[in-house]
Image (cartoon, rainbow, N blue to C red; front, side, top):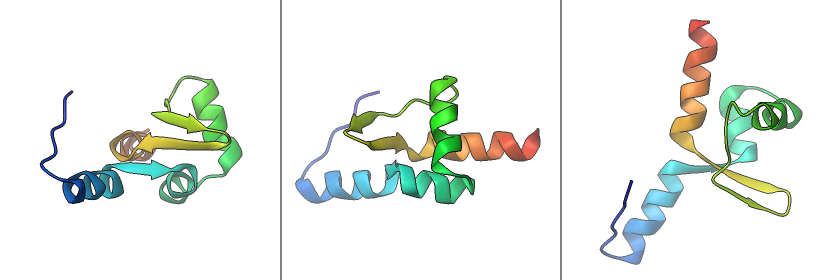
Length: 72
């Protein structure tokens, strides 16, 4: 998938709406950080970037997990 942005503001808008932190992911999933780490170690979700102890995720991946949990 390729994304193109015409200016810095479009890029910032995209990042703010499509990429979330571990804290935001645990809030959406209503789970602990440890449980999210377990999902990562089991390969159920993959962070798009890890910086020290901070992980970034695609928001759609987290929403997919949430929907999957509710339909199971």
